[in-house]
Image (tube, rainbow, N blue to C red; front, side, top):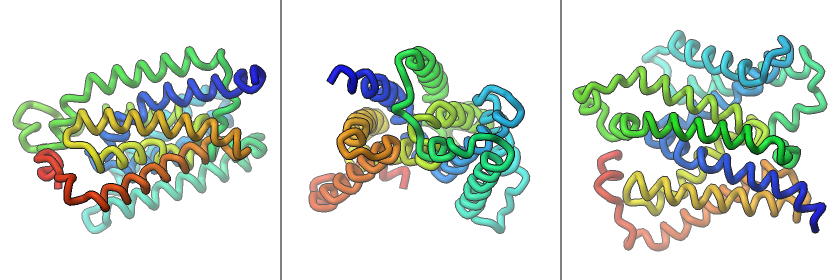
Length: 277
């Protein structure tokens, strides 16, 4: 049992630390209607890793470069004739293909492709936790700094502009925090599953929350539950940890959705959510 704990405990703690940032960030992703952008950015991490390995740079720099490329590219290809969600879907799949091609053809990382796609959470050890905790704390600090402005922009952008909030600057701040999260979440759940770790707890919480604060708290609980059941379940079932975490979160969401539909007459949306619609 002690030998098992030496492997599982660091992964479990790392996932729990990561969930502290993924839950509130995922709520903002939903409020700002940027789930497709988060997916595109998550897929872009694969290309960032390939560029970092190819040019012998730190992985974070490679991911940051691709994040900037995504933002600039979206500005350049913006066209009112094209649906935003469709454009983001094309960008996401293009980045995924480019990342896979670069990893397999330009680097010696062919054997690690599955790890980059689905994560290698169990490979984390105690020495990795301080850096992860520091990165999450920095992310939480930045998120706390932009939080009031982000909430105002999410609820009433015109009123936020009148109050002196710059939507473009706040969007860039938010994208920066999101890119940082993708970088630190890559090893946990992989490029393909980052958006699931972000969105699923927030979606589940949305079903039962009556305010932004309540939604964040519920999302935190769901994220921690998903990480715990996912890590231990992956050991018990002998399957990939990142996949298990996201599958558990998906099961929790659909279970919550079914329960909410069965009790829909008792759960009335608050004024905040009604206004958002």
